[in-house]
Length: 435
Image 1 (cartoon, helix red, strand yellow):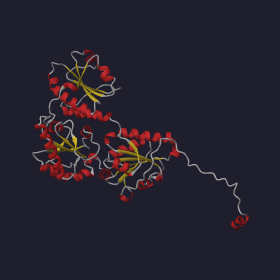
Image 2 (tube, rainbow, N blue to C red; image 1 turned 45 degrees about the horizontal axis):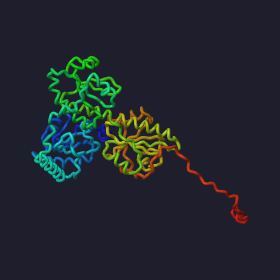
Image 3 (cartoon, rainbow, N blue to C red; image 1 turned 90 degrees about the horizontal axis):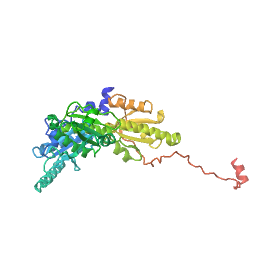
Image 4 (cartoon, one colour; image 1 turned 180 degrees about the horizontal axis):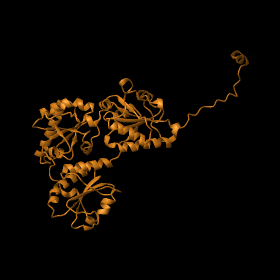
């Protein structure tokens, strides 16, 4: 049933409502709409946890996180982001697993990863060490408080009639371009926000999303080409696509959020890995909500080209669903027999596919075709909480064998040795006895 499935697979649409922290805690709930104001523009030191409501490790951390927040009240700010609900905010800071804890210190655009223990005492110790370091830096005249300055214009690229096509249209990067007029009041209000967003976005996307500005009163060819009628007008440019109007808010937080969405749209798909050992399975599945596992036919049944066509379908699907941050794995039929048995696979032929929730020890099987359409239908059903699930055999992860990686070639039958019996004299009596 729908309800059972939602409970089993931890559908983010439902569980994100059951927030892990409430207004009565000292943990400040952070979202894309308040993150910039609360954290980035703040002079305080912040510890921020990026979590997902379905993540077991996050649920274990919550009591200690609340305890640490109470102990640090008025000294260090402690916040939490539901990164399952606010994927763009998680993506902005390179969050790949849950929980991830970041320390936002002197340079708010470059938070540090918290590497300490998960007890309230360890968290408080880590916070106090970071605070001591921040105060020491301020005392010695290094960069002070938050990077709440409006940002210099150095990261906003000045675009002109002459350089626009080469810089923007021929670029593989995504561009947000503001068309402005020097006399326009709204443009002046936007300028510091645009500059601050440009610096943050450049740093967080390693330059893959850029912010530019065109003085439309000077560069009238561009203004005319893109039908600019009012100021400021912001357009989004992606290679090979028609420009799109930017419809978001005008604060740096809104601009950064849209830019990071564009970045994740443009980001590479998750890696598709062969299950070569228990480590590969654990690492891929442990901190993902779901792990998508394919069992492909033996190489002797498909050859390299057949196998590659299956892998290609999986890579396309991984790309299509990359924002879900699921794990993607494959193995060859017969290589991981215990895994196949626990999923009840071998029974209806290969290729087969299962989606596993390793925390709940539940799985769902692809019943349709192993094609883009069939897998898309299967994954879409999972996304909205439909489909039937079963418990993984024995309720524990099966034994995983260490195997050699596929070499990318066609398979070869094992060579059988020929025995030449012509030189062997058999004893006549022996033959008679045997007969």
